[in-house]
Length: 106
Image (cartoon, rainbow, N blue to C red; front, side, top):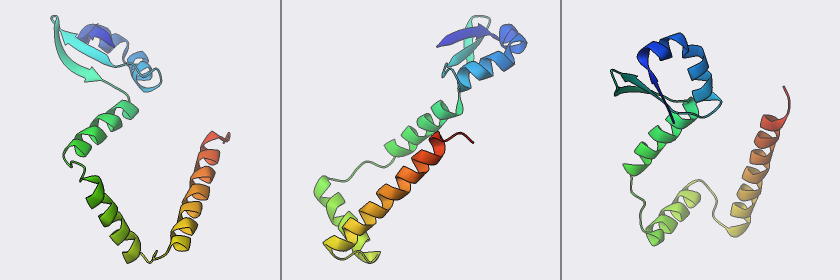
């Protein structure tokens, strides 16, 4: 985490944005020695917002989660073990393709 004054942030805004976005630095911007704002990259922001949303919805007990998950699978048409295994394999393959396309040069 870095701390810079408003004047310094004004002079180095582009560099600070790059540090936040690519260097994953969090920059505290101060005025007269008091923290006034924070500059952070989108990944950090998404994590922060995601955690906030997550904390608003506590997890159900595991037995209730299993029951609700099974009900959702049945409602979606996955009623037996083979259907669920086929779904799992399909999701695994799709995820592997997504990961492969992200790591391939464009």
